[in-house]
Image (cartoon, rainbow, N blue to C red):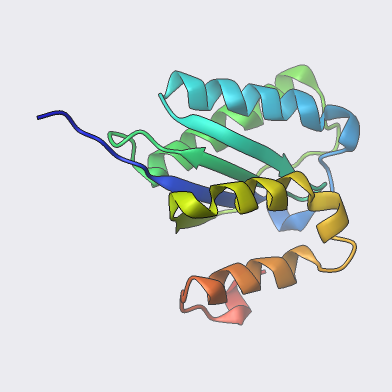
Length: 148
């Protein structure tokens, strides 16, 4: 029998100390690079977008890939790419940790729209408030003292 999966994730991570260093002029270049990483790992990218201090990735993950390894590989490669290409002159690295939230495939279209509209969304809600909402929505216990 063959293996069939639908492992849909939203991955969220931030720049170190949530510094707003990912300037708009370089974001598309970074997102294209990350898309290539995902493709090389047999993951299907549905949408990637973010703001100056964080990134959202909506992707199907290949069943042989551990989420922790995928995020680690993205961060390491993206860090090197940013420094080599000099797309964000003040970039100081990525935060330690990440958020990874699983979804039913029926949520895919809403997730794609949500990530697509990050600029509009963040006119109303800060990254901190957004992240806390995600944790609560997914019933993840956390201590706010250690989030930011």
